[in-house]
Amino acid sequence: MRWVEKHKMPGSYNRKDHFYNKAKSQGFRSRAYFKLEELSAKYKLFRTGFKVLDLGAWPGGWLQFAGKAVGPKGLVLGLDLVEIEAFAESHIKTLRGDACDPHVQQQAVALAGAKFDVVLSDMSPKLSGVREADSAAAVALAEAALSACRFCLKEDGALVIKLFKGVGTEEFVRGARSSFKKLAREELEASRKTSNEYYLVGRGFRISNV
Image (cartoon, rainbow, N blue to C red; front, side):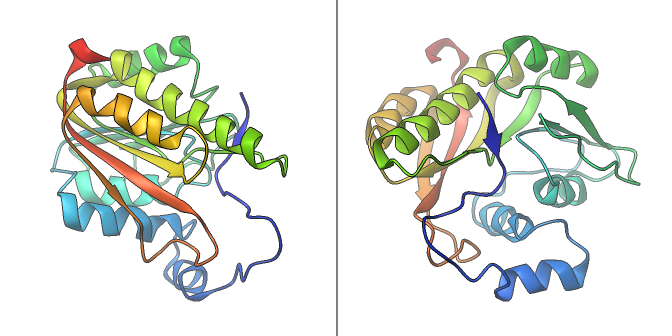
């Protein structure tokens, strides 16, 4: 399945809004930096030395924030079909491949030398304009990210997934609850005002329930 990092809503939107301009002025690769910053501030997702896997990581806004959060003693690895521009920081690494492919996920664990403390997914589908089809595609990506935890996430680890309000989303959320001790949803200030996206934050991963 193919995805894009940014979810484009039907019609026009103001791409160059406050967070877009803020990211550009501060040297961040995307406004997504501030989304993860917002989530991390509330849920304390990262610690120094953590290993973090970012699925669908292009262009690298989440990699930048996670790299700063875990520091040089940690590791941040980004997967994407699109080649991600290399980072100067040696602990931020990238791997080109299908983030939904279990073989690529296992390769990521091998590169890290262990399972990850946190798995992130900001993946979005390429839109067809058909609401039902687009909702199904978004849920499929969320299911792939949850499935990746079986191979990639440590017991008691954390997962962040982007979701969109639509057909099949609530069913996915209900199904995901058994895989985590705590599950919360957040609509972020840094999201575009026209977007129907929100984020699911799972903490206390139960590997036996995936």
